[in-house]
Amino acid sequence: MGVEFFKSLAPLKASPSSEIIPVSLMDRIDGDSVMLKGNLLLGYHLIRYCSLRNKEAYQLRTHDVKGYNDVYWIEPSHTKTGQPRAIPICREQYELFHSNREYVLGGEPSYRERSVNRLLSDWLRNYIPRHYTKTVYQLRKHCERELRELHGNVIASKLAGHSTEVSYRHYDHIGQLPTPLKEDLTLISKKSLSA
Image: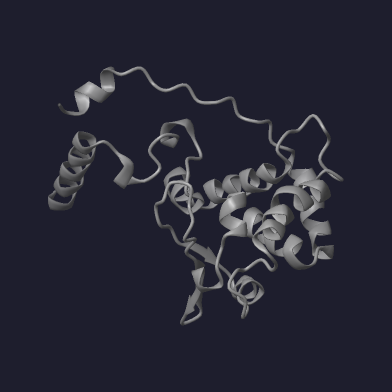
């Protein structure tokens, strides 16, 4: 069973995408975010600038924030797909996220979760009109848009840990591809290297 089998399958239907708020509104939110403190500030940065999902943000451990030779990154240990990824961050974010606590966000598990799921959402609702759904999701989608503009769809998909376009929606990591398709991709890459 090769790649032809998968070509014959009907594509999975993608869930309808939520409308994304305009960049001008996002600029206003970014500007006012400097007033945030504690878990709200941390959660905002983790989702808005690192494209973490809510659960990835409130479960992020301090030892997942890494730095070496002026290069800084996050390796979330709890990802939706279970696949590891490294997300580049700047020195200022490294200093913001790195502390002597076990988790980047402070407090008990229920408070960390509430900080991202409820409190951050409530703060965003001061800016985002009701007809837009999923307020915290809006932060991540704007980060994805910026990643696509900077790095293209494939790299953005790897950094965000999920797809950014329909063509990448169901197989975010090469490791998740069905074996025949993975083998075909391996052969193609070997041929291109030897050419």
